[in-house]
Length: 381
Image (cartoon, rainbow, N blue to C red):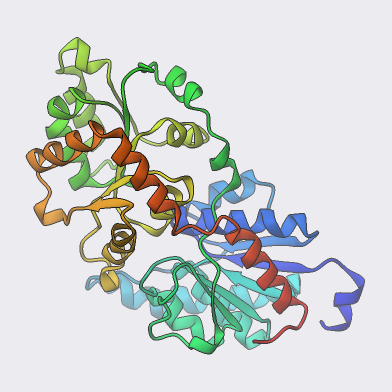
């Protein structure tokens, strides 16, 4: 493979996904690599978010069995580890032989594990990116095979080989920087004079957050307009329940509330229009809010391995960029009592946004792209 490098463009395999955060980070780095003339291909899962978003960007996607390591007891943990992960590793091994990449960039998630294992056998150098303040299980499983581990936050190398860690920040999709407030207000038919709150629980929605916001609607809507991205989980039925709650509101309040299952390309405009974000504290959302200077009210997902969402949120809280409320303390009354004073103090919200921005590294995608190129060209830590 070494002699071939001189006769063709550098080729890098990106792997990861399953969630929006892992996929978005990989796409941001792919864009930065494309500016350097690097050819990117993606190895991911058949049903993760990457299966839709990656081909939309014109990047070839190869799907393999990946399995999933659940944070609770399930027989599927055993079958995935015994069957799907080995099958995925074998398919990745064959794909790497065909694709002949100069490096593998793993964005995180269990989907990346088979590819990193196959790369280690093939002696293809690997760069891993860890998004959260607490290293995830996939990163800890694969770190031993990586030439470099790119970290979002300084001091988050717990349990990782520190000599191979470098702080790069977390990439942001560049299109999220180009939002227009007016477009969001027009699309959702909202009032330019009233403050806007964006509620999101991630692509799948967050059941507890949906339920509490739904119960708090009268009190919240007296102070603000809301765009509520709730997911479309058929098991919880949150979308239908929230739509029924909206229909039962008085007309003046109903006009202030928009409930949608998913926010797509209009997300940049929604962020540009929002005065406050209410959300879980996944790495992707926290990074977006910090990069864009958005104040936030975070309700970390309890039970996440290493309590990573709480760690993410507490870092921003320490900088003065957010309010954090643990889920057990979350009630409709507490939500209204916390959010309404924030909305009544725009100067405080502005300061929170500026403090959140101090944690962001706007050039994270470029930093990681350069790291991948260094490793692809034979650089060593």
